[in-house]
Length: 316
Image (cartoon, rainbow, N blue to C red):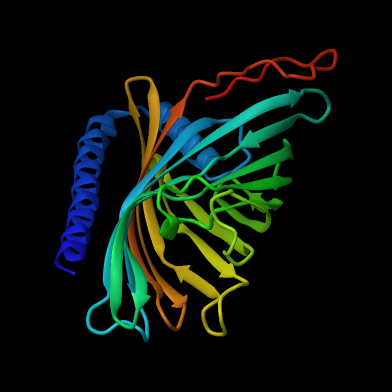
């Protein structure tokens, strides 16, 4: 148990150190960008708003680091802490440009757990560090003025480096984005349901995967590329017992988009509490820091071509 505690402590310290380093870096960069002209501030505000849209035309890399706090009836004493790092590139590929422009957006989620508390019995835990399972939704979306619509297949890839950090199964299911945007705000819901389609090969006794992730967000645009709002993700596990299926967090964020050289970067700090949570043991709270650099698009020309009279759009 001492070695378990040491691993938990190390994982927590790593997460705290990463979060503090990013926070300090984000503060310094925000001060450096405080001299933007009104026109530059408007452009950064537009970039910030686009980053709130899961099917926009911006290529970006969403990087998150933070700490989860888990608790439940099977835990005695204080909540158990574990760190995490997650990377989610947004890769919009133009398909066709015409009267209606279509894109295919790849949004792979690559999660790393740092000292994650794994319940092994009543008030007994292991702490694991490693890569968890990846989710890979493919979204096909038209470019619309106000509505945000997209859908396609989502895949579960059994990439976990430890059995306790993944489901050890291949999965497939529908992914859907529905939302609405104005100059002042953006609101979206983004469900993705996954069912098992095959085992990884080294395990055949794991219950079949059947679970939902549901992102819900409301982003309010403020002057000088600031934003406030909520951006949370609920989860549902059909194989969980009664009282242990749902986890529904809610909590605010604040963000600022700045320019590092020629690259726009959005920095965001958020905290959340699970108003619905697993009875036995599950996430109760989370503190998270996010950095989202905008990168050049690697594919500019529509794969299926464009109609006559259409031209390549200019992306801020």
